[in-house]
Image (cartoon, rainbow, N blue to C red; front, side):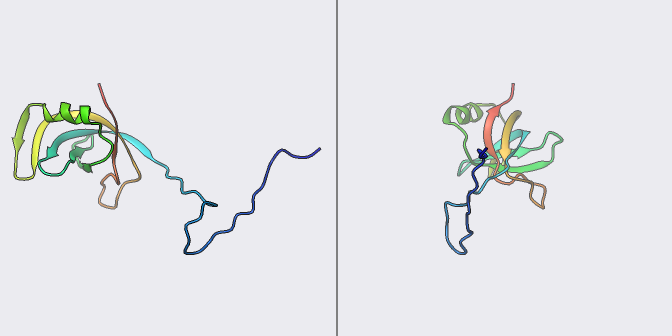
Length: 112
């Protein structure tokens, strides 16, 4: 009886973009704290739940969620950032850098 398994012979092409191979990114997920936002270009200041700096999030934040953060009461500010009351946020990221920061954090949701 023939097997229903199909095998493909795909060759790796050096120096070429090939549709024979797919890049799969194993995203990880975590809760972080939004402590503030940049004054210039968009970016949220993130920290881990233990208070350590986690990086800047610049991706996938819907405009309605941005508005909520921008309308929160300001605690303090400096020449680069406006600091707000901490807000919990769920993000996805590729990995942790050698410096301990989230690599390419992307917005998933605000936590209750």
